[in-house]
Amino acid sequence: MNFKLIKNVIDLIEEFENQSLNKSEVSIDDFKTWIVSNNNINEANEPNWSGKENNRSPESVISTLLVHMNRYAKTYSRSAIFDSDFTSQEDFIYLINLKAFGEMSKMDLIKKNVHEKPVGMQIINRLIAKDWIDQTDSEVDKRSKVIKINKKGIEVLDNQMNKIRKATEVVSGDLTQNEKMELIRLLQKLDNFHQPIYNMNIEPEDLLTVASKNIK
Image (cartoon, rainbow, N blue to C red; front, side, top):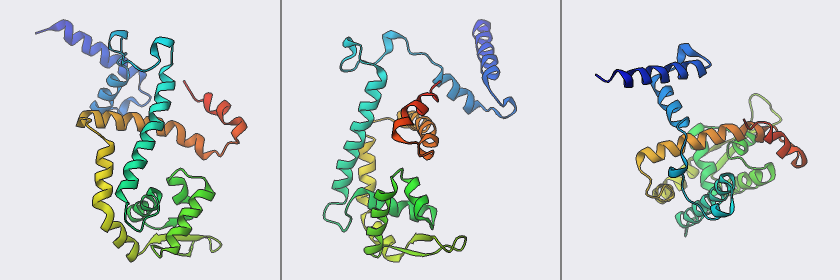
């Protein structure tokens, strides 16, 4: 039996517990996630990227690649709705959210899709004009409206879902299942960082200053 290895594992568990805020609720999955997130990549295993030799930062690469992925995804989405009644990918994304989460206020739907109010309202009004969603008075606040997908909206969405699913599969490319899970974990971590800042509706002139203070 390799007692040195066992001791190293015990030391690692002790370090994990010391860093855990709520020790009574940690699980083996928490431990595995912690190991992955704290596995420092040495210089020999670092990926290469364009401009690295000129000291281009990892942050610059991440930002650029995220922009590129968004553009790639949009091109596949345009292909998925080609020759259909959908105007843009936002149309079916809004319908998918309404189908999945049920009726909600217009602003809740707009926030769920991380859109500015004018853009979100334009999409919602387009869906109403196409008679794909219904709006009614809110039972909580009669001054506001709630919206929900209707039968026609479900039908038009279902008719296009095969192509939409194919587009989402293509976006994931040739990643393995483990790579997909790791990418989800990292993107969720980024989303958890940015969403509270976004929801604060900070003025543009102050946004970078406030956001920078949240970086550890």
